[in-house]
Amino acid sequence: MRLNGKTAIVTGAGSGFGQGIAARFAAEGAQVMVADINEAAAQSVAAYIGAEAQGVDVADGASVQDMTDRALDLWGWIDILVNNAGVTHLPAALDTISEDDFDRVLAVNAKSVYLTARSIVPHMKDRSAGAILNIASTAGVSPRPNLSWYNASKGWMITATKAMAVELAPFGVRVNALNPVAGETPLLKSFMGEDTPEIRAKFLSTIPIGRFSTPEDLANAALYLCSDEASMVTGVAMEVDGGRCI
Image 1 (cartoon, rainbow, N blue to C red):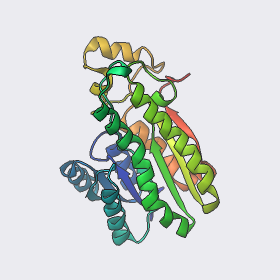
Image 2 (cartoon, rainbow, N blue to C red):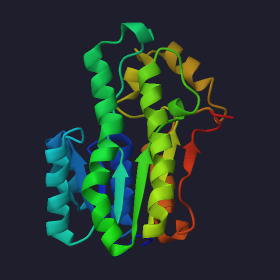
Image 3 (tube, helix red, strand yellow):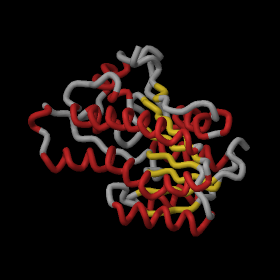
Image 4 (cartoon, rainbow, N blue to C red):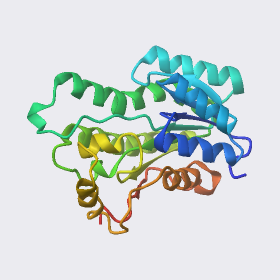
């Protein structure tokens, strides 16, 4: 029970990496809020793992504030925030991506980190404690062609993590990131353009360990970084990538 007595909000927890992280946190004793734009998915996951469900649009300030207010009403404090919600555009030449797709990727992947910080960091500062985990990507370290604006949004997230870590350390708040390689999540098909054995083989050939990441892989790393065991760890962007970025 490595998170016994802790409270945690996990965004994008209705599926994929977020679901895995939320489930592991709950199993380790945390009170968890499963937050997702798909409220039905959030409710399903929350019911399964014994958590709270919350519909949220992480790109909308009022929605993020509603999520924060509900968590504070439920628990009185927030120990852990996992910014996991994310989207991508389909693979295409960078000069052909629509403005709407660009705006959506930056709003969900980047602006959301600002919005959750604006709502939640003041409470963490008041308690001189807290752990924030941003789910970035190997795309922010070793970009893939034809995913340029997604790559850029994840690079932004990595830099934001380090900037937040430096600023918030004196207040007792730690900020870290995880950089997963492509995983068995609903976004996989979007990254690849289409899901065929040939394209999967091409992707896997770039991962030395030879498999995609899983929600369990991310949950294990997230558990460490958000637990008191990592009390001296802040500002890191840990790759969970099977050697992809070597």
